[in-house]
Image 1 (cartoon, rainbow, N blue to C red):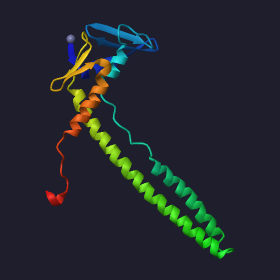
Image 2 (cartoon, rainbow, N blue to C red):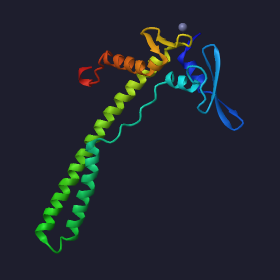
Image 3 (cartoon, protein in one colour):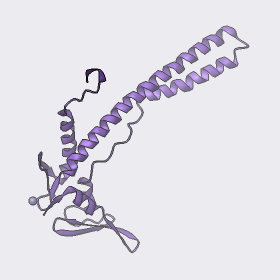
Image 4 (cartoon, helix red, strand yellow):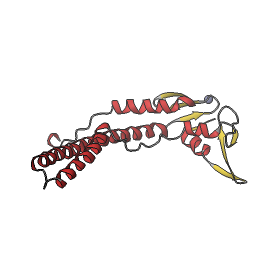
Length: 190
Ligand SMILES: [Zn+2]
């Protein structure tokens, strides 16, 4: 029984209420499969198969880089240095002035690192979203045969057994992006 992975994933995640407990019901191949909690019927629990054949998860914004962490430290230490220098300006002239200079340099360095952190994360996020769009396109075209536990893509061929599907989608999206024609966005060359 061959179906699109879209329908396999959609049915596998359908839930019904069963006397207060949540039960998962879906079709695995020709068989109606169901599960409550950790109950497992057949080779796959329905939810596990649906998870393997589900759409690739959308990426979140990448975490802070080392530059971003250093920026926060420089803001705090530089800010405290500035504060200490401004408090002691009246009493000790030379030390307070050098404290102000050191504090300003620290805060300025923090701003530079903060900008660098934002640029790196924006680029990574943009790449991750492009990868996700390609992966989603690959996923949406897949078919799955429950009898063989085999998934394949009409143009790209076999995507292996269900356990190999997420990695195969990832690899196909990466190669699609790598071979995509480079778009020139520079107005001067257009
Ligand atoms: Zn088959």
